[in-house]
Amino acid sequence: GIKHSFLENILPSFLKKQDDEKTSLSISAVERSIMNDLLLSSRERKTMAKKWIQIADKGTRKMSYKQFLLVFGFRDESWIRRLFDIMNHSLTGTVTLVEFLQFCISYLIIDKNTTEELSFRLLSRRGSTFVAKWSVLDLEDIVNFVSFRYREIKKLSSKQKKALKIFVAMDVDEDGGVDIREFQGFCTKNPVFVALSHKVQNYLRRRLFGLDFWVAKSRKLKYSKTSGLSALT
Image (cartoon, rainbow, N blue to C red; front, side, top):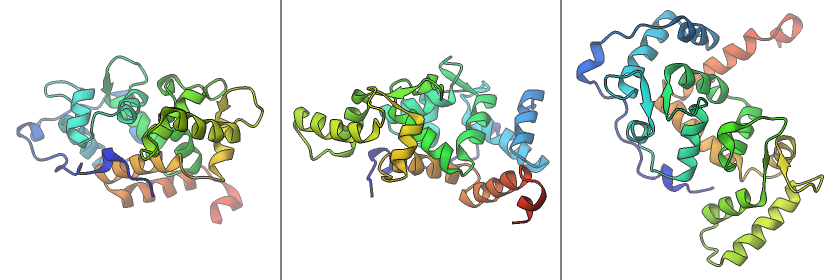
């Protein structure tokens, strides 16, 4: 498997009891609506509100990048910065509870397609502004990944050669850019890229309610979207 440096020794105690734990956090209509989309119960909504008090910078309702690293125990690496920027789709530099919940719905619900999409966005230097119809990976994105993944390769020319081989295999239409469909097609044959996003997702799932919670919530959400005979299978 892939050994990611940001997953080494990053298990600090998460969400310790703090002095402000008893502080109530009102839930806005927008926040409540997204929580409903996530099928959170009344108790779960209250728990999420309390967690957000502890996650957000003290005295605010927003999470800075520095706080993100501190709370989740991540190292300051390019992949983690991109992860934060994906959460912060408003590009303000601080994540709101609404943005955080939207990220949870988009990427913590267990789904093959969204795992691949997150992997695509983490690889891309432009992942924070992802648009499925237009966004593409270029050769430099793959060179960066090869440099991270295959650290035994020391020469830049060797890294570029390996990256080019991978890129050519991905770029089916040979237009010089890998779109999300080409990327997903490659991922069905080789999981090297999705391993990156999958580890990040499972780490966050375990830190937020636990993996069992997200498995159950994923099943419930998928069931709620089915109807007729498909709901019985």
